[in-house]
Length: 264
Image (cartoon, rainbow, N blue to C red; front, side):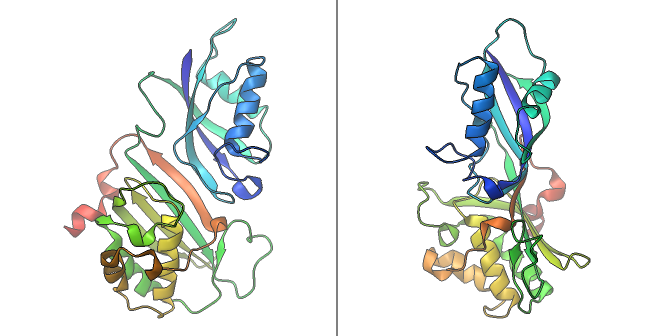
Protein backbone atom coordinates (compact mmCIF):
# COMPACT_ATOMS: atom_id res chain seq x y z
CA UNK A 1 0.00 0.00 0.00
CA UNK A 2 1.16 3.52 -0.78
CA UNK A 3 -0.24 6.51 1.14
CA UNK A 4 -1.04 9.55 -1.00
CA UNK A 5 -1.64 13.02 0.39
CA UNK A 6 -3.54 15.22 -2.06
CA UNK A 7 -4.72 18.83 -2.01
CA UNK A 8 -7.91 19.64 -3.85
CA UNK A 9 -10.49 22.29 -4.66
CA UNK A 10 -14.20 21.79 -5.02
CA UNK A 11 -17.39 23.72 -5.59
CA UNK A 12 -19.63 22.52 -2.77
CA UNK A 13 -22.92 23.71 -4.23
CA UNK A 14 -24.02 20.36 -5.66
CA UNK A 15 -22.47 18.22 -2.91
CA UNK A 16 -24.21 17.06 0.23
CA UNK A 17 -21.02 17.77 2.15
CA UNK A 18 -17.66 15.99 2.18
CA UNK A 19 -18.46 12.87 4.20
CA UNK A 20 -19.92 9.87 2.41
CA UNK A 21 -23.66 9.34 2.98
CA UNK A 22 -26.08 6.80 1.54
CA UNK A 23 -27.97 7.98 -1.54
CA UNK A 24 -26.31 11.41 -1.47
CA UNK A 25 -23.68 12.97 -3.73
CA UNK A 26 -20.66 13.71 -1.54
CA UNK A 27 -17.04 14.64 -2.21
CA UNK A 28 -15.69 11.55 -0.47
CA UNK A 29 -18.14 9.34 -2.33
CA UNK A 30 -17.17 10.68 -5.76
CA UNK A 31 -13.44 10.19 -5.09
CA UNK A 32 -13.92 6.70 -3.68
CA UNK A 33 -15.96 5.69 -6.73
CA UNK A 34 -13.11 6.81 -8.99
CA UNK A 35 -10.51 4.95 -6.94
CA UNK A 36 -12.64 1.82 -7.00
CA UNK A 37 -12.63 1.93 -10.78
CA UNK A 38 -8.86 2.37 -10.81
CA UNK A 39 -8.38 -0.63 -8.51
CA UNK A 40 -10.95 -2.69 -10.43
CA UNK A 41 -13.34 -3.16 -7.55
CA UNK A 42 -11.25 -2.73 -4.41
CA UNK A 43 -12.55 -0.11 -2.02
CA UNK A 44 -10.06 2.61 -1.11
CA UNK A 45 -11.14 4.70 1.90
CA UNK A 46 -10.57 8.44 1.57
CA UNK A 47 -9.84 10.48 4.70
CA UNK A 48 -10.39 14.25 4.72
CA UNK A 49 -8.81 16.95 6.88
CA UNK A 50 -12.32 18.16 7.70
CA UNK A 51 -15.92 17.36 6.92
CA UNK A 52 -17.29 20.38 5.10
CA UNK A 53 -21.08 20.68 5.17
CA UNK A 54 -23.48 20.76 2.25
CA UNK A 55 -22.86 23.86 0.14
CA UNK A 56 -19.45 24.64 1.66
CA UNK A 57 -16.54 25.02 -0.76
CA UNK A 58 -12.83 24.20 -0.54
CA UNK A 59 -9.75 25.82 -2.02
CA UNK A 60 -7.35 23.80 0.10
CA UNK A 61 -9.01 20.60 1.30
CA UNK A 62 -6.49 17.81 1.92
CA UNK A 63 -7.16 14.08 1.75
CA UNK A 64 -5.15 10.91 2.13
CA UNK A 65 -5.75 7.34 1.09
CA UNK A 66 -3.81 4.07 0.95
CA UNK A 67 -3.63 2.76 -2.59
CA UNK A 68 -2.73 -0.87 -3.31
CA UNK A 69 0.31 -1.45 -5.48
CA UNK A 70 -0.97 -3.55 -8.37
CA UNK A 71 0.89 -4.07 -11.62
CA UNK A 72 2.98 -0.94 -11.24
CA UNK A 73 3.63 1.90 -8.82
CA UNK A 74 1.87 5.21 -9.59
CA UNK A 75 4.01 8.34 -8.94
CA UNK A 76 2.27 11.23 -7.20
CA UNK A 77 2.13 13.41 -10.32
CA UNK A 78 0.54 10.57 -12.28
CA UNK A 79 -2.05 10.05 -9.54
CA UNK A 80 -3.16 13.68 -10.00
CA UNK A 81 -3.56 13.10 -13.73
CA UNK A 82 -5.43 9.83 -13.24
CA UNK A 83 -7.89 11.20 -10.69
CA UNK A 84 -8.47 14.52 -12.45
CA UNK A 85 -9.36 12.64 -15.64
CA UNK A 86 -12.14 10.92 -13.70
CA UNK A 87 -13.45 13.84 -11.66
CA UNK A 88 -16.60 15.85 -12.40
CA UNK A 89 -16.04 19.49 -13.26
CA UNK A 90 -16.68 20.65 -9.67
CA UNK A 91 -13.59 18.87 -8.28
CA UNK A 92 -9.93 19.31 -9.17
CA UNK A 93 -6.74 18.00 -7.56
CA UNK A 94 -3.89 20.52 -7.38
CA UNK A 95 -1.06 18.80 -5.48
CA UNK A 96 -0.03 15.27 -4.51
CA UNK A 97 2.77 13.62 -2.59
CA UNK A 98 3.55 10.24 -1.13
CA UNK A 99 3.74 10.33 2.65
CA UNK A 100 4.78 8.09 5.51
CA UNK A 101 2.18 5.69 6.90
CA UNK A 102 2.23 7.63 10.19
CA UNK A 103 0.84 10.72 8.48
CA UNK A 104 -2.89 11.25 9.02
CA UNK A 105 -4.65 14.02 7.15
CA UNK A 106 -6.84 14.91 10.14
CA UNK A 107 -4.69 14.16 13.17
CA UNK A 108 -1.47 15.62 11.74
CA UNK A 109 -2.92 19.09 11.23
CA UNK A 110 -1.39 22.11 13.01
CA UNK A 111 -4.07 24.57 11.99
CA UNK A 112 -6.83 25.41 9.52
CA UNK A 113 -7.68 28.56 7.60
CA UNK A 114 -11.31 29.27 6.77
CA UNK A 115 -12.50 32.16 4.64
CA UNK A 116 -16.02 33.55 4.53
CA UNK A 117 -17.21 35.94 1.80
CA UNK A 118 -20.24 38.20 2.17
CA UNK A 119 -21.85 40.03 -0.75
CA UNK A 120 -23.14 43.49 0.14
CA UNK A 121 -25.24 43.88 -3.00
CA UNK A 122 -28.73 45.26 -2.35
CA UNK A 123 -30.30 42.31 -4.18
CA UNK A 124 -28.93 38.79 -4.43
CA UNK A 125 -26.57 38.56 -7.40
CA UNK A 126 -27.58 35.42 -9.37
CA UNK A 127 -23.92 34.75 -10.16
CA UNK A 128 -22.86 34.97 -6.50
CA UNK A 129 -25.76 33.28 -4.76
CA UNK A 130 -24.03 29.91 -4.37
CA UNK A 131 -20.59 31.35 -3.52
CA UNK A 132 -21.16 34.14 -1.00
CA UNK A 133 -23.34 34.98 1.94
CA UNK A 134 -25.60 38.00 1.44
CA UNK A 135 -26.01 41.00 3.75
CA UNK A 136 -27.69 44.04 2.16
CA UNK A 137 -27.79 46.12 5.36
CA UNK A 138 -25.54 48.87 6.69
CA UNK A 139 -22.17 47.60 7.96
CA UNK A 140 -19.32 49.37 9.73
CA UNK A 141 -16.12 47.60 8.71
CA UNK A 142 -14.07 49.17 11.51
CA UNK A 143 -16.45 47.94 14.19
CA UNK A 144 -16.15 44.38 12.88
CA UNK A 145 -12.36 44.63 12.68
CA UNK A 146 -12.17 45.79 16.28
CA UNK A 147 -14.64 43.18 17.51
CA UNK A 148 -12.82 40.35 15.72
CA UNK A 149 -9.76 40.86 17.93
CA UNK A 150 -11.77 39.59 20.91
CA UNK A 151 -11.83 36.14 19.28
CA UNK A 152 -8.04 35.80 19.34
CA UNK A 153 -6.42 33.39 21.75
CA UNK A 154 -7.62 30.29 23.59
CA UNK A 155 -11.28 30.26 24.61
CA UNK A 156 -14.14 27.91 25.30
CA UNK A 157 -16.23 28.49 22.15
CA UNK A 158 -19.40 26.76 23.40
CA UNK A 159 -21.43 29.85 22.45
CA UNK A 160 -20.27 29.41 18.83
CA UNK A 161 -20.91 25.68 18.46
CA UNK A 162 -24.08 24.54 16.70
CA UNK A 163 -26.16 21.78 18.19
CA UNK A 164 -25.42 18.46 16.52
CA UNK A 165 -21.68 18.59 17.08
CA UNK A 166 -20.34 15.60 19.01
CA UNK A 167 -17.15 17.10 20.43
CA UNK A 168 -17.26 17.62 24.19
CA UNK A 169 -14.12 19.77 24.56
CA UNK A 170 -14.99 23.12 23.01
CA UNK A 171 -11.74 24.92 23.82
CA UNK A 172 -10.00 26.19 20.69
CA UNK A 173 -7.29 28.71 19.89
CA UNK A 174 -7.79 31.37 17.22
CA UNK A 175 -4.41 32.54 15.92
CA UNK A 176 -5.48 35.02 13.27
CA UNK A 177 -8.60 36.97 12.34
CA UNK A 178 -8.85 39.49 9.54
CA UNK A 179 -11.92 41.34 8.27
CA UNK A 180 -11.31 43.17 5.03
CA UNK A 181 -13.12 44.70 2.11
CA UNK A 182 -13.10 44.00 -1.61
CA UNK A 183 -14.71 47.24 -2.79
CA UNK A 184 -14.51 46.33 -6.47
CA UNK A 185 -16.64 43.23 -5.76
CA UNK A 186 -18.79 44.92 -3.11
CA UNK A 187 -17.80 42.18 -0.67
CA UNK A 188 -16.52 41.74 2.88
CA UNK A 189 -14.09 38.89 3.58
CA UNK A 190 -13.54 37.21 6.95
CA UNK A 191 -10.39 35.11 7.49
CA UNK A 192 -9.95 32.82 10.50
CA UNK A 193 -6.94 30.66 11.34
CA UNK A 194 -7.05 28.40 14.38
CA UNK A 195 -5.94 25.06 15.74
CA UNK A 196 -9.42 23.70 15.09
CA UNK A 197 -13.03 24.73 14.63
CA UNK A 198 -16.30 23.42 16.05
CA UNK A 199 -19.41 22.51 14.08
CA UNK A 200 -20.62 25.69 12.27
CA UNK A 201 -18.25 27.78 14.43
CA UNK A 202 -16.98 30.00 11.60
CA UNK A 203 -20.48 30.68 10.27
CA UNK A 204 -21.72 31.58 13.76
CA UNK A 205 -18.75 33.92 14.38
CA UNK A 206 -19.47 35.64 11.06
CA UNK A 207 -23.13 36.00 12.03
CA UNK A 208 -22.17 37.70 15.30
CA UNK A 209 -19.65 40.00 13.62
CA UNK A 210 -22.26 41.08 11.07
CA UNK A 211 -24.61 42.01 13.90
CA UNK A 212 -21.84 44.11 15.45
CA UNK A 213 -21.15 45.75 12.09
CA UNK A 214 -24.85 46.58 11.87
CA UNK A 215 -24.69 48.02 15.42
CA UNK A 216 -27.17 45.50 16.77
CA UNK A 217 -24.53 44.41 19.28
CA UNK A 218 -21.96 46.48 21.21
CA UNK A 219 -18.48 46.34 19.66
CA UNK A 220 -17.00 44.17 22.43
CA UNK A 221 -20.06 41.99 23.01
CA UNK A 222 -18.14 38.89 21.92
CA UNK A 223 -16.24 38.98 25.22
CA UNK A 224 -19.54 38.55 27.06
CA UNK A 225 -20.76 35.92 24.60
CA UNK A 226 -17.60 33.83 25.03
CA UNK A 227 -17.88 34.00 28.82
CA UNK A 228 -21.56 32.98 28.72
CA UNK A 229 -20.85 29.59 27.08
CA UNK A 230 -24.39 29.58 25.78
CA UNK A 231 -25.34 28.91 22.16
CA UNK A 232 -28.51 30.97 22.61
CA UNK A 233 -26.35 34.11 22.81
CA UNK A 234 -25.69 33.93 19.04
CA UNK A 235 -28.62 32.60 17.07
CA UNK A 236 -27.64 33.91 13.65
CA UNK A 237 -25.63 31.47 11.49
CA UNK A 238 -24.28 32.72 8.16
CA UNK A 239 -25.26 30.49 5.22
CA UNK A 240 -22.99 27.72 3.98
CA UNK A 241 -22.63 29.27 0.52
CA UNK A 242 -20.04 31.85 1.64
CA UNK A 243 -17.69 29.46 3.46
CA UNK A 244 -14.41 28.10 2.05
CA UNK A 245 -11.86 25.75 3.57
CA UNK A 246 -8.93 27.85 2.40
CA UNK A 247 -5.80 26.09 3.68
CA UNK A 248 -4.70 23.32 6.04
CA UNK A 249 -1.39 23.67 7.90
CA UNK A 250 0.79 20.60 8.52
CA UNK A 251 3.72 22.62 9.79
CA UNK A 252 3.41 25.09 12.64
CA UNK A 253 1.32 28.10 11.70
CA UNK A 254 3.78 30.84 10.55
CA UNK A 255 4.51 33.69 12.95
CA UNK A 256 2.96 36.23 10.58
CA UNK A 257 -0.38 34.54 11.24
CA UNK A 258 0.03 34.42 15.04
CA UNK A 259 -1.83 37.58 15.98
CA UNK A 260 -2.83 35.90 19.25
CA UNK A 261 0.80 36.12 20.40
CA UNK A 262 1.01 39.80 19.44
CA UNK A 263 -2.14 40.41 21.45
CA UNK A 264 -0.55 38.83 24.53
